[in-house]
Structure formats: structure tokens, C-alpha cells
Image (cartoon, rainbow, N blue to C red; front, top):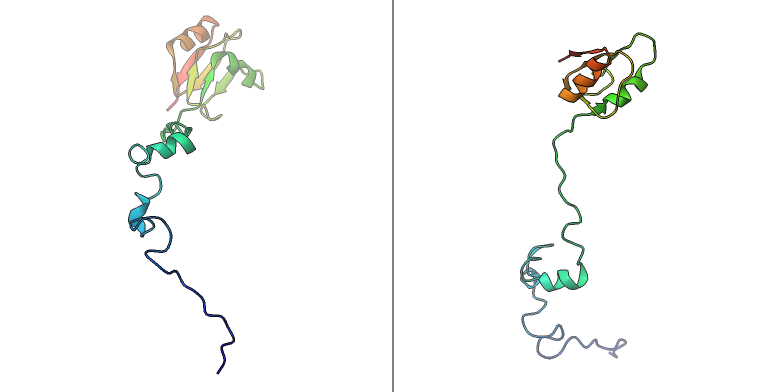
Length: 131
């Protein structure tokens, strides 16, 4: 019987490629999984290939930050002539002191700063604490 296909020549000789004996031999040759070792044995890779790697995410706090509003912005929220505003129903948890108030307001809020209280009382208004 004649051979119709030429026989393939598989890798001949010691190891066939990939350099020395230990290279390209399973998981151990990776030097760790993913970004492991970037401060140690993979540091030269970080310096040359990814110098921006450290510090690009920063720190993100998981704690919810309370929504706050300044005294100067409270007057803009009043729609009718009652001069009374409930910041808790509007989604605000704290009243801060930046800005000024011209009209006497009654503000209902859970938390406030001392300077914010001074400014509202100076204009003839008052703050009611709502839990």
C-alpha cells in the first residue's frame, strides 16, 4: 500500500522550543496568578509595561454619605408663601452654613451645624429637629 500523506515531523530533540527545561511548564512558571507578585518578582513588569497600575483606583468608602444642603440654597426650594420647608421629605439629612438667608424660615431637618442655626435665627427663622 502506498502512502498518500507525508508523515508529520513532530518536535525532535531536547524539549523542543520554549528555551530551557523549566520554562513553559504549567502553572508554576507563571510566578503566581493574575497580578500576584507585582511588588516583588514582577516589579520590573510593572515599571516597564504598567507604570500607572498603582493608585489608579484609589479608595472608595462603602459608607453612605448623608445628603446635605447649604443655607443659601434653602430659599430656592420654597415654592409657596408659607416660608416653611421640610428638608427630610426632600431627601436632605443635614443643613450646612454656606450662604445667607434673607427671609424668616422654619426649617425641619435631622441635623444641622451651629453656624447654620445662627444664620437662620438671625434672619428671624427657626430650626425644628425631625428624626
